[in-house]
Length: 227
Image (cartoon, rainbow, N blue to C red; front, side, top):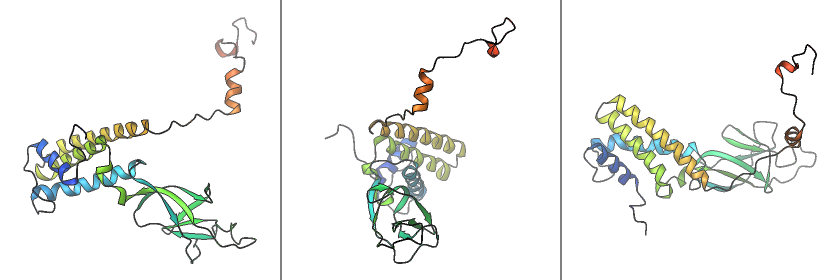
């Protein structure tokens, strides 16, 4: 058991913000109070913003999409796939577990899954594709990190100052603080991810070991003759 209070629900995060600003707490969600009416939209918009802002582990998922029987409107692709309604941001698409070219057109994923671009030389039955994306159904903050929860609390406090106290200057300061915390949350999240190897091209390596030029101004030795 963690030694600090965790995890926190939406109601608990809102009450934490209200307690910090010295306002009345909310007894129950959707109770019609001024506090809930001001804080709930601020919380929801901030949560959606945080979700789209970064591919958090607790938000990302893999989904298998089946081909649509209706061909895509874009004739550069041969197969369309209906995007999940809870998809917030598409990260990548795989066909046969390998990266492939894709696009989004009329709220559909379009892929050359039959050997396209169309018409395919030998039409085949299109296979399902796998997508990785950010999904709103995974957005429950009980799975978030403590820093993301601080972002949500700061956003709630911004809403309190804006909607209840009518203090736009303080509301702006709290929103700026939320954005600073969000940057910290991204950095801390990525510290836990596997490090990506730096691509070292042959051209870069050649330049690194090439004999350096003589360091003289404008390529001249100062004697009136080129180096």
